[in-house]
Image 1 (cartoon, rainbow, N blue to C red):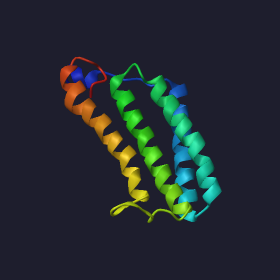
Image 2: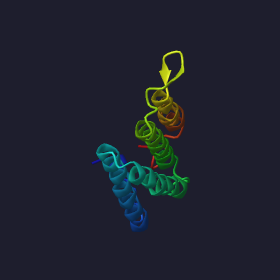
Image 3: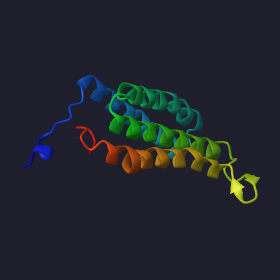
Length: 134
């Protein structure tokens, strides 16, 4: 095993517990969506997104973690928007041309891709020396 493989990245247990709670809320939100429980699904957006942003804020000093956590946050935003469009029956409503309301969720999805592209194509190649630059 070389030196690079021996490097460790430790996550404080408090952060890990919050991440696990975040996963619980996220899954619960998606179960509510799948089952058609409108108000429960919408209510679950609040803790899911809140914890997502807290996790991103707590990891802001590690660019690798920050970029991935921001991408997750915008993914949840896109996913939540999409869920709401279906709950309120406006998902197939045309916004302009052939673009539907549901397809507007592509804005945060693409934002997440841009954040990760920035990290992998620009930041990481310029900061190879960083421990958390996987």
